[in-house]
Image (cartoon, rainbow, N blue to C red; front, side):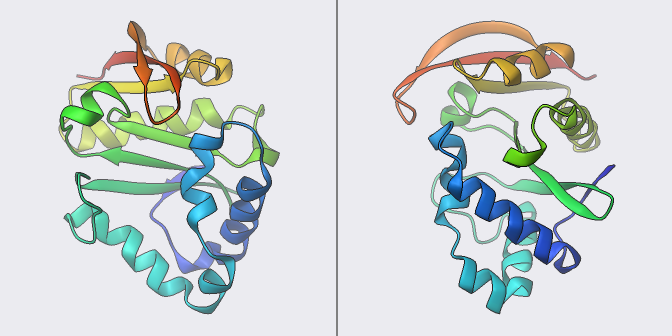
Length: 177
């Protein structure tokens, strides 16, 4: 099990995961990005998709209000299991909602310890970027994510309303210096 940069070698398992996320009724906000992906477009030109994902770490092709971030895929046995984004810095919005690290595990692989592993590895990537203190937020309803964050050293700072989700989020800090 390892974190890798997005790669065309994981096309089939990534597309399979996208289909799972698109069919998952839980935590709609978390699945929003996956639901925006168009399967026929991914199948037709996966290389362009991968290049666009890699370009974000260089500060290219970012949506308005986004900061540079590195995307890594958690793979196990050659299969895409999940994704993490490590934001290189925070803006005002990310300081409140989002934080340095976001992660998700494909629905069929949840509850198997992958969430703990992906955050553990993402914290190493953040350290490599020179980040010494990481903030991570979680949907207040996502008890599993809260446990993952706490297991990885997260200390709850506060509970804040997330207008994008329509309910509260929890904000944690993790010292990685």
